[in-house]
Image (tube, rainbow, N blue to C red; front, top):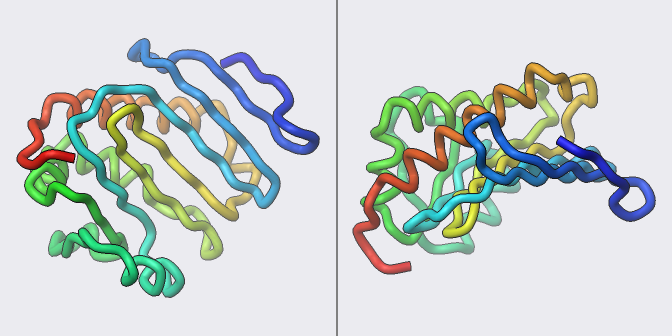
Length: 160
């Protein structure tokens, strides 16, 4: 990844994942981190840490999906195509990647994974800066590559 300044107090990096997909990383004060891997997905989904604020805001939006998997009860999910989301969550590689990507490392941390037609994005808010290691970033990129591959291969059951 090649880095550069993004506004006065932020940084950005561009490059490719180990799987060859374009990746863009943005780090803002807060800290707030966005890791975006390009792809061509047939639908949308958001899944992230279940918090009181997230539940309050999430209740205002349609398309919430009940998660019954005991390993995912700490997460909240939404998407317009429940069949596609469930197909993705039933894939063992995608499920494992999502669980690793959404595993909070501190009590104040909030993580989410967003899948959209043009990308998969990991968002981490209010984390410890020592979390940003070469190993952690390599693991995130590998998991995001996995999600892109599985999501691209999971057919949509409804139009976006």
